[in-house]
Amino acid sequence: MSDLKIAVILGSTRPGRNGKAVADWVMTQAERRRGASYELVDLLDYPLPHLDEAMPPSAGQYAGAHTKAWAEKIAAYDGFVFVTPEYNHSTSGVLKNAIDYLYAEWNNKAAGFVSYGSLGGARAIEHLRAISAELQLADVRQQLSFSLFTDFENFSVFRPGPQYADQATALFDQVESWAGALKQLRAAEPVAA
Image (tube, rainbow, N blue to C red):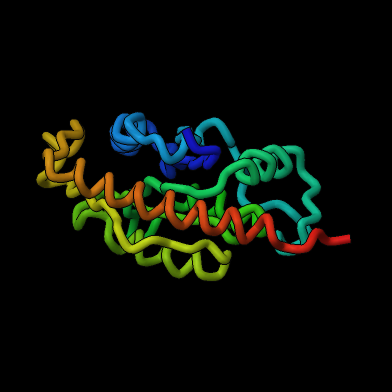
């Protein structure tokens, strides 16, 4: 087993959310992986208020205990797979808020995306790609997009087709490859005095 650590970040906290089933499916696919260890990070377990830090995250001067706990959690990973719903042509507010809390903890790490929504959540991923660029997160090409119309029964019971397993493999391969390369880059960076 590699020493790469990848977080699968569940980006919905709504009651009755579809994202939990999607994230659980991603984790089931990840269990077969040998190139990295995967851990589910559920934003329900990190209740962050709307960004309440006085200093910008790029300053790295976190004051709140909730921010420090979130920063410590995210800093431990080499890459991320974001599981996002699509709300109003974008990602969820809770995921955007959680991302906005930090800066350096995201830098020079890999990111992949899994989305769901009426159009497969593709627009949420496009917004996350733009956000990733600002945070120096290297997002990979492969993505998974699940339709509420074809991949869920009655819009609530997740039933992905077998074709998604190969797509998940490609996503994991890309995230692990980039995460490994970027981990070496981070290790070569000079330590700030």
